Image 1 (cartoon, rainbow, N blue to C red):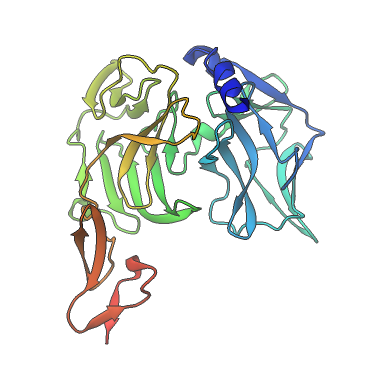
Image 2 (image 1 turned 45 degrees about the vertical axis):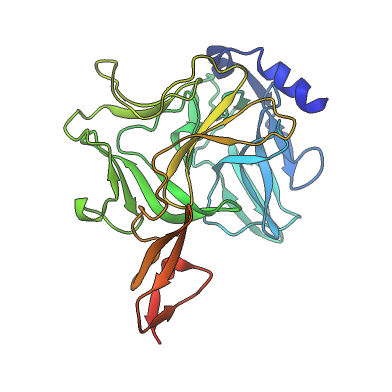
Length: 320
């Protein structure tokens, strides 16, 4: 019942309204890792900013909270280790600070003089100055996901996570290049020879953005002329209460996911860049190669080599 109520509330917002509707967060309010004050909810309760569990500790981020499957869409300081259960998050001296006992702290947003904060129904966590001007927003610093209304700007990138349960930096990079090209690379490599997919829009301009709309349509847009230059996924005729996200997954493939008012709250793949999970370069590391086992990728070592770590294929193979 609670699940259905959350979605009915959420469906009362149009896309524009969702961008504008927010929860004002008091600057004297703090979060703890567990309990009822572990996150700040958006008005509909669909999205939340705060602590979520990762491994044996806790991490700060934005996640879909109004569904059974708590889906992370943004992670703060993603490569910092998870914090213990006695950590707190609070506004201190005009900053948003994560306090880790006994005497350690780290800043979540690198801005000063915060006067107000909001968790929007769009999934965007926003900080304001005293004039109510936006001085920082999570939409400007995507990790591995973009949401409707969150363009991936020219020169920005998404980096895959280590795994579905570990949102620290993975091994693949999706880059919206300055020449208008959307390109996929192994994280540590640059140059066309290392890319394993490209949009073919090089030279289209220096104002190209990657966009997802509220019907699951993923496309490249020339912001100067307002023209769509490449459609990736096809928009659904009606979202019928669905919500969408585009995630650059840990396997190096980006996908558009949709979720309906299913009591189980499961995301389903609406569109995928490719079904060939061996396409991403670097999946198997040095001296390794990829084969498909049914529809799943499986790494193997060249003759005379064994895995450096059988649990982490990307580390490659060493001589046996």
